[in-house]
Each structure stands twice: as C-alpha cells, then as structure tokens.
Length: 134
Image (cartoon, rainbow, N blue to C red; front, side):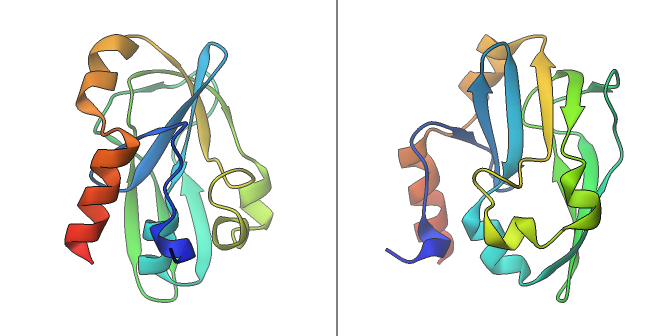
C-alpha cells in the first residue's frame, strides 16, 4: 500500500479527506495522506479560526495552499476550537511530512459528537472512497 492510500483505523473521515480523532474530550482534525498526495507540496496552511471560536460540521475553517491548488478545509464536527496547531504557521511542510500526527490543524471540543460521528466515514468506508477515486 502506498503512503497516499494509508488510512488509520483510529479516526473517522469526511468525504473531503479530513480526519477526526478523539483525544480525551477533544477531536483533533487534519487532512489525510490521500489529500496530501492530491495537493502536492503544501506551501501555506491558513486557519480562519482560533481558540474559543465556534465551528460547524461541514463548514470551512481554513484553507490549504500547495504548488498545485488552493483548497478549503472543512470541519468534521461542530463545537468550540480548543487549540490550533501554531507550528503550521512557520512550517506548512509538516503536512507533507506527517499528516497523521505532527500536522493536525485544530482541536475541537465537540458539541454534538454522537450525531456527527454517524455522518463521518469509518476507516473501511474511507478506504473504499479513495479506492473508487483512484
């Protein structure tokens, strides 16, 4: 399996290639290796939210720019932003190097997680999505 097709079982996924991982009472959000492969070299991550801001599932929380394109980032869950990954401001290449760990983008304290988790894809459904896109 190529790195672009890597899918982690400890997360849920959006059809827009964001991942959501529960960490304690928060949900960390990032983009998948498949998304990184499609984008190419990431040159800028612009987060439009900061700690204390509200996000709504399916709504844009920032943009990611690469040598190929500019793409919106969509929140997989609704809630309050607990923190954002400030490392990405000066090092957007972290998204290319480690989209699963170091390049998480925001952490959200969710408001309605049970309902929204039902909307997210599990790892097997996401594997099928990217295989069909492939």
